[in-house]
Length: 437
Image (tube, rainbow, N blue to C red; front, side):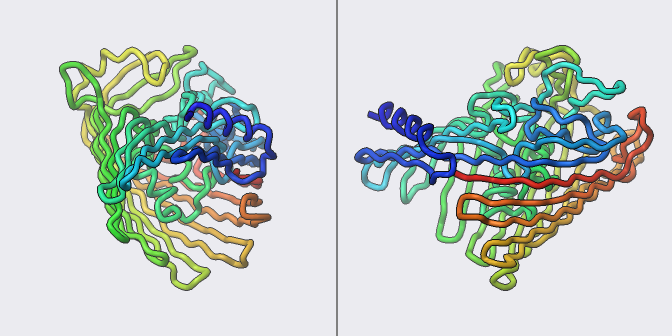
């Protein structure tokens, strides 16, 4: 029966207009919904790599080391405000307050029709000797069929919900989803904490989603508690590749606060390799903390702020890590371990949302990522972002948006040694349309 329901949902979705409401099919105690977001726009960026159909947003990020070059680039961005995606979710009432649930969600490029990928494994794409595949975005998206989410679980009205599978990092949930999102400019291309998987991953861009994870979620009135454990599955090294996260928060209509912590052993930071279908891997241990708050001062105005502390240190089980031949289906080229003194990254953000009219929303945010000196180097780095966006709702499902982001780097984060000199300032401008279904 469930197979028939899913088939009906998919068939009806493809025969319906793209702007229709999310499709829900009910049969007795079972409900299955097909949903999605289509977001596309045009962007202009300074000191950036070429637009790439293999990259999750289409627009290669500005200011990313060897990725930067002098000049201006224009192209089609895939998801300026929200990542384009489609998904299926469902539940079955098991009686006595119990239910079975599932959710499958896939991100794709609207401009090319391809499944979203970081583009890291496509081989060298050099322009003037500069590798355009050194990405800082969410590299957890690497061409998997259901790259955003794939889970099944059981829920009880009194005891809470347990889910199993590929799931969001709890910190990524806080940034973009919980309480309506704690990112003031909640837009994929125009907010560093929304764009970079590093912040949602606690310091590693491919750690924003956790494979083979067990998650427990429970609400107590206005309180929420979440615990997540990612299983490493490594022989003779039970802690290797494991990931423990916890989150607690308080949510009302006008106020919210969320706190989270993560301990990840032998997680990876992946980067480009010149050989096709191959990536380089650095193994690290991560400890990260996040605290975020929002407050509705008056009905149209909401303030948002947050702090994240990320600590990167040497992996605990590097000998076992060397036995890994593939990551995300890509061959491992060069494997290395983080060594030396602990690296710390401190990120602060502050901003506001203002509902100017019923149809128009204004958002502005300031973000500051600081890297204190570590190891043999005495250099410090500072990365400041100034972002703003305006949204205009044409309906409940469709809106237009325009946004910009200014990025200023200093100290160790100033982009040098790129063959084009030292680059400190980067700009991104864009406008687009988003349709939900």
